[in-house]
Length: 225
Image (cartoon, rainbow, N blue to C red; front, side):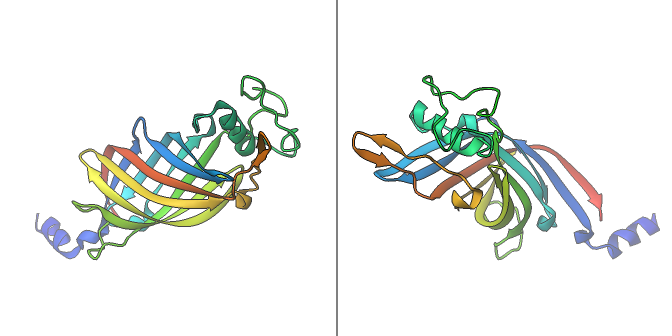
């Protein structure tokens, strides 16, 4: 008994990790904004799956990921949505796109063959988190600013990025939110221009993304480092 008490006194609390596991909550969506010739196309997509393993005392070891299915991306136009799937999902080395549009009259792509989807998801991996709160804590009873080191995989190309976001507890849930943007050229994505009457409508290079990701708690694991 004395040995146990002495051990507790000598070992600092920081040597114990408290890991919380989360899964993506249902109906979590992401908003995106595509600037184009005449303004901005606003759209949304479903975050189909995701997980987060958050270490309260060592946020740098936090890992996780979430993915967006490109067939869930909607902008209010079936034709435009299919063109987005062409741009994001096809292997240009095999497909007839971008030399020509390959969406059919029903605004769908073939399910097999050279013009079928090869890259069905956009994936973001969380590599680490850092608290930007004066307390240094990653989770508080308020909205906490954080720095997230992550990696996007879009159109088969992966690139690291630092995101400045916010994290906040909501009962058994955890919300991570923030804004970011990326260049289509960085991921070799080509959005083929379209024509409306005498105008050629083209999408600009920068895509703006608004993230509000809701994670649902699964379990808490405590272990000594």
